[in-house]
Length: 578
Image (cartoon, rainbow, N blue to C red):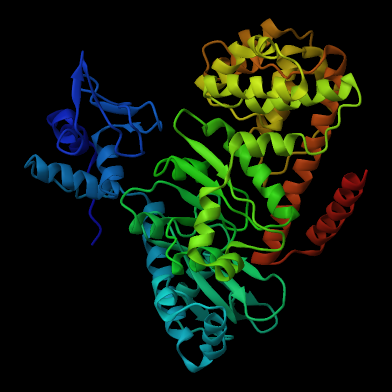
């Protein structure tokens, strides 16, 4: 039976406990003034940056950014759920727990618990199937790839048989509908039977940081596309949040000095088998902000180790750019460039653990990879090219929160370009740097457009009519279209825009956008704005395209939507060629 605790009890609990008393039994704290300082338990550090405030009953770490009340601390420190942490605190202080008669648990959480159970049961079925006669070929494939029985069982690898129960009885129909919502089952419209989207694939269960299975990855046995298939996005699985192997990495290490980020399941499993147990894999996508936050909460060093080909190098560069806002003092990213044609799985099997770890210990630092990549195709045949490179480099460097790291990078840039006093240029956007840190804004296309409009209101006349789909997943698009439609054909000024939002939460946001320095000469602002609009239009069409493809996969498209998808494909191909 699911337990419920009322908000009233939680508030009373927080009133009765002392956060300092509880935390100092887990972290050594030293009082300085009104606050207590200690070494943060959530990341590696030498100097104490973890602060507990007894007056506000809150904690905060200036190193990794974790913060919250005592419930948050217990959840993170003891790896407990929200309910479990409350029960733990109540037991420590001998406070009787009063469970609510009325449910305060949302339907969403209740459904999620059902999904966790269903997906766990399915994983057990897949594991069993690998060792059944139907899984003989899959098991043989894994052995031929060099995996031993222990590692196969450790990662709960399984196999999806080529069939699924086609007869739908009254007892199983509802369960199958739930599996369909998880994106695992689909209906064959020809015979109205359910089939498993992972059929005839080797199954890799994907666990969240708590060890709960949230999805699957499936690999084909023979050469056919797609080679890998992940669970679709659903209530409990979001690939931008999850990292394959993160739970196992935390499980195997009390202190995680570094984490290797690779591209695939096989890479993680192979490295673990060779006793390199600090590896995670992204799930068929680029590294995300959430991924980096999770990794930097358990380690101070991230090493990107992608395949040794052109696509792998491009992925390394993209990871560098996404990582920039997270490079605070003490945090570092490094790059492990593999030989051409190799991946972590193939290389460790050729070289073994000792040589592979030598490569790990000799990875490229951020600065070396940054400048190597930046100067790859830049031969300064003109002042214009040199100026363009400076702006490009500074646009990346200014996103780094660590000011002294910025200074060193700019000095190095000046040496390479031949401008000794380049550091003076940086003073022009010191203020903008502070705004970015305080507000933690990512410069999306929508925000750049709004920023330029606030700074140069006349640009609003260049905005064409934009189409908005109800299915749109582009953050801020609805607001942007509403903003443009409201202010178009008005005698618009920056002051009027800000005054319109006085007393609202958006005012502070717009004031921040007003301070953004786009590093663009005045005579190029209009063209830059037009290009951003073109980019936005493509993003809108791509977003609609992705929605229709997803819809087709789930339940199919009617004739009208098929025509729309065909038209979108044609338009996007043409736009990208142009």
